[in-house]
Amino acid sequence: MEKRTDWYEHPEYYEAIFGTDTVREVDFLQALSERHGTGGKLWLEPACGAGRLVAEAAGRGHQVVGYDISDAMLAHARKRLTPAQRRRVRLSQSRMEAFAEPSLQGRVDLAHCLVSTFRYLDSEAAAREHLIGTRKLLKPEGIYVLGFHLTDYARTTPEHERWVGHVGKDKVVCNTHEGVPERRARRSPMRNRLRVTGPGKDWLIETTWFFRTYSAPQASKLFRDAGLRVVAAYDFDYDLASPVPRGSRRLDRVFVLKPA
Image (tube, helix red, strand yellow):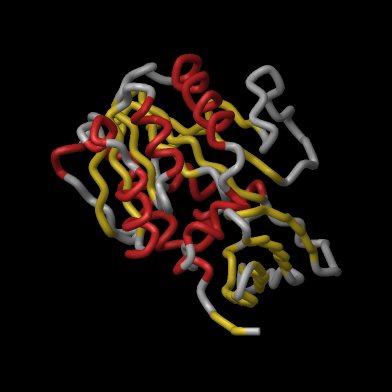
C-alpha cells in the first residue's frame, strides 16, 4: 500500500465522492437566485475546487468566476471545460480571505460555497474578511449561498461518515472523522482517508486538518459583523419547498445572505 497525504492533489478521486450532486446543486442555486436574488447571469464560486459546478453553470449560459488555492484543482477545472464554456469562465488562484477583483465590485448576481469549505477559514478575522470581500462584489440584491455544518458543542463522541465511488476501474472508499469540538479554541479535528484500489494500485490518501466551529448564534453574529443578513436558510437536501424552520436542530445549513 502506498501512502499519500493530500486528497486535494487528486481531484478525480475527490470528485468521485463529492461530485455526485452537481446538477441538483446548480438547479437549487438557480432557483434560489430567482426567488431571493436577481436571477442574473454573473456567478462567483469561492473555493471552486475541480470546477464541477463552474462547468455546469457555464454550460447553462452563466458567466462564471471561480478561484481556489489548489493548483491541482484549478488544472483539473480548466481541463474539463469545453471551448464554449471557457469563453464564459475566468479561474484564478487565491485564498478565500484574500480574493479581490475590482472589476467585479457590485456586479455579482450570485456567489456560492456549498460544502463546508468556509470552515477551513481558521479565525474570526479570516472568516469576516472573506465575507466582507464577497459582499463588496455582490449587487445590492445579489446573494451569497453559503453551506456548512453548525456545531453541537454538547457532542462528546466523534462523528464518522463513509462513502464509496468509482473512477474507471478504480474503487474509492472515503472515511471522514470529525472529532469532539473544542469550544474554547473554536475548532474540531478532522481526518479524511481515501482508499483507492484498482489494477496495479493500492493508495491510502490521509489528510488531517481543523475545521472552525460555529453555533447558530456565532454564525449569526459573524454575518452581521460582515454586513450581511440572512434572508432564508435551507439544509443539504436542497429542497426549495422546505426552508429550515426557526429553532430547527438540524446542523446542516445553507444560508442565503444579502448585503445588509
